Length: 160
Image (cartoon, rainbow, N blue to C red; front, top):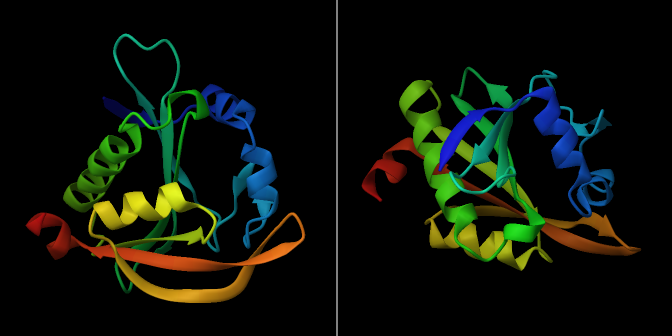
Protein backbone atom coordinates (compact mmCIF):
# COMPACT_ATOMS: atom_id res chain seq x y z
CA UNK A 1 0.00 0.00 0.00
CA UNK A 2 1.30 3.44 -0.89
CA UNK A 3 0.51 6.85 0.56
CA UNK A 4 0.61 10.04 -1.49
CA UNK A 5 -0.71 13.57 -1.19
CA UNK A 6 -4.24 13.71 -2.56
CA UNK A 7 -4.69 15.52 -5.86
CA UNK A 8 -7.71 17.53 -6.93
CA UNK A 9 -8.76 14.53 -9.03
CA UNK A 10 -8.50 12.28 -5.94
CA UNK A 11 -10.78 14.68 -4.08
CA UNK A 12 -13.33 14.45 -6.90
CA UNK A 13 -13.22 10.65 -6.65
CA UNK A 14 -13.66 10.74 -2.87
CA UNK A 15 -16.74 12.92 -3.34
CA UNK A 16 -18.37 10.16 -5.43
CA UNK A 17 -18.06 7.51 -2.74
CA UNK A 18 -21.44 6.55 -1.36
CA UNK A 19 -22.73 8.65 1.50
CA UNK A 20 -19.61 10.84 1.69
CA UNK A 21 -21.50 14.08 1.23
CA UNK A 22 -24.37 12.85 3.39
CA UNK A 23 -22.07 12.13 6.31
CA UNK A 24 -20.05 15.30 5.89
CA UNK A 25 -23.17 17.42 5.83
CA UNK A 26 -23.84 16.19 9.35
CA UNK A 27 -20.41 16.79 10.79
CA UNK A 28 -19.98 19.35 13.53
CA UNK A 29 -17.45 21.21 11.39
CA UNK A 30 -18.23 23.49 8.47
CA UNK A 31 -17.93 22.05 4.96
CA UNK A 32 -16.27 23.78 2.04
CA UNK A 33 -16.00 22.11 -1.37
CA UNK A 34 -16.71 18.69 0.09
CA UNK A 35 -14.16 18.81 2.89
CA UNK A 36 -14.26 19.78 6.52
CA UNK A 37 -12.81 23.17 7.22
CA UNK A 38 -10.37 23.24 10.10
CA UNK A 39 -10.03 26.25 12.37
CA UNK A 40 -6.89 27.28 10.55
CA UNK A 41 -8.45 26.25 7.21
CA UNK A 42 -5.62 23.83 6.44
CA UNK A 43 -6.47 20.23 5.62
CA UNK A 44 -3.70 17.89 4.47
CA UNK A 45 -5.18 14.92 2.64
CA UNK A 46 -3.47 11.70 1.57
CA UNK A 47 -4.67 9.12 -0.93
CA UNK A 48 -3.97 5.41 -0.67
CA UNK A 49 -3.41 3.07 -3.59
CA UNK A 50 -2.58 -0.62 -3.81
CA UNK A 51 -0.76 -2.21 -6.74
CA UNK A 52 -3.20 -4.25 -8.80
CA UNK A 53 -6.26 -2.25 -7.75
CA UNK A 54 -7.24 0.33 -10.36
CA UNK A 55 -8.91 2.78 -8.00
CA UNK A 56 -8.18 4.70 -4.84
CA UNK A 57 -8.59 2.51 -1.77
CA UNK A 58 -8.84 5.22 0.85
CA UNK A 59 -8.11 8.67 2.16
CA UNK A 60 -6.60 10.08 5.34
CA UNK A 61 -6.62 13.74 6.30
CA UNK A 62 -5.31 15.70 9.22
CA UNK A 63 -6.29 19.18 10.33
CA UNK A 64 -6.84 21.44 13.37
CA UNK A 65 -3.09 21.68 13.93
CA UNK A 66 -2.09 22.93 17.35
CA UNK A 67 1.59 23.85 17.09
CA UNK A 68 1.91 24.74 20.76
CA UNK A 69 0.61 21.37 21.93
CA UNK A 70 1.93 19.38 18.94
CA UNK A 71 -1.44 17.83 18.15
CA UNK A 72 -3.80 17.46 15.20
CA UNK A 73 -7.14 15.86 14.45
CA UNK A 74 -7.52 13.31 11.67
CA UNK A 75 -10.20 11.60 9.67
CA UNK A 76 -10.18 8.70 7.23
CA UNK A 77 -12.38 6.76 4.87
CA UNK A 78 -12.00 3.45 3.06
CA UNK A 79 -13.46 3.08 -0.42
CA UNK A 80 -16.95 1.65 0.28
CA UNK A 81 -16.41 -1.14 -2.29
CA UNK A 82 -13.27 -2.32 -0.49
CA UNK A 83 -14.29 -2.35 3.15
CA UNK A 84 -13.77 -5.25 5.57
CA UNK A 85 -10.49 -6.27 3.95
CA UNK A 86 -8.05 -4.78 6.48
CA UNK A 87 -7.39 -1.69 4.36
CA UNK A 88 -8.34 0.72 7.16
CA UNK A 89 -5.87 -0.90 9.54
CA UNK A 90 -3.06 -0.66 6.97
CA UNK A 91 -3.96 2.93 6.08
CA UNK A 92 -3.93 4.14 9.67
CA UNK A 93 -0.69 2.30 10.42
CA UNK A 94 1.03 3.89 7.44
CA UNK A 95 -0.40 7.40 7.89
CA UNK A 96 0.14 7.64 11.64
CA UNK A 97 3.65 6.22 11.45
CA UNK A 98 4.40 8.70 8.65
CA UNK A 99 3.10 11.69 10.64
CA UNK A 100 4.87 10.77 13.86
CA UNK A 101 8.16 10.21 12.02
CA UNK A 102 8.07 13.30 9.77
CA UNK A 103 6.42 15.99 11.92
CA UNK A 104 6.65 17.37 15.45
CA UNK A 105 3.22 15.99 16.30
CA UNK A 106 2.97 14.27 19.68
CA UNK A 107 -0.75 13.50 19.63
CA UNK A 108 -3.25 12.54 16.96
CA UNK A 109 -6.94 12.36 17.74
CA UNK A 110 -10.20 11.75 15.96
CA UNK A 111 -13.89 12.06 16.64
CA UNK A 112 -16.39 9.40 15.59
CA UNK A 113 -20.08 8.90 16.16
CA UNK A 114 -21.41 6.10 18.34
CA UNK A 115 -23.17 4.56 15.33
CA UNK A 116 -19.84 4.12 13.49
CA UNK A 117 -19.05 0.73 15.02
CA UNK A 118 -16.44 -0.17 12.38
CA UNK A 119 -14.42 2.96 13.13
CA UNK A 120 -14.67 2.45 16.89
CA UNK A 121 -13.45 -1.15 16.56
CA UNK A 122 -10.56 -0.09 14.33
CA UNK A 123 -9.38 2.64 16.69
CA UNK A 124 -9.61 0.34 19.70
CA UNK A 125 -7.78 -2.42 17.79
CA UNK A 126 -4.95 0.06 17.24
CA UNK A 127 -4.87 0.85 20.99
CA UNK A 128 -6.26 4.36 20.76
CA UNK A 129 -7.42 5.75 24.08
CA UNK A 130 -10.99 6.98 24.44
CA UNK A 131 -10.52 10.47 25.87
CA UNK A 132 -14.12 11.54 26.12
CA UNK A 133 -17.71 11.53 25.02
CA UNK A 134 -19.55 14.45 23.45
CA UNK A 135 -23.10 13.62 24.43
CA UNK A 136 -25.81 13.86 21.77
CA UNK A 137 -23.38 15.73 19.58
CA UNK A 138 -23.99 14.18 16.16
CA UNK A 139 -27.33 14.37 14.34
CA UNK A 140 -28.15 11.71 11.78
CA UNK A 141 -31.61 11.19 10.31
CA UNK A 142 -33.28 13.16 13.09
CA UNK A 143 -31.56 11.29 15.93
CA UNK A 144 -28.82 12.68 18.15
CA UNK A 145 -25.87 10.38 18.80
CA UNK A 146 -22.90 10.62 21.12
CA UNK A 147 -19.49 11.30 19.57
CA UNK A 148 -16.37 9.65 20.96
CA UNK A 149 -12.94 11.27 21.02
CA UNK A 150 -10.02 8.86 20.57
CA UNK A 151 -6.31 9.69 20.67
CA UNK A 152 -2.86 8.17 20.49
CA UNK A 153 0.43 9.68 21.65
CA UNK A 154 3.69 9.35 19.76
CA UNK A 155 5.31 7.35 22.58
CA UNK A 156 2.32 4.98 22.70
CA UNK A 157 2.49 4.45 18.94
CA UNK A 158 6.18 3.52 19.18
CA UNK A 159 5.33 0.93 21.83
CA UNK A 160 2.89 -0.87 19.56
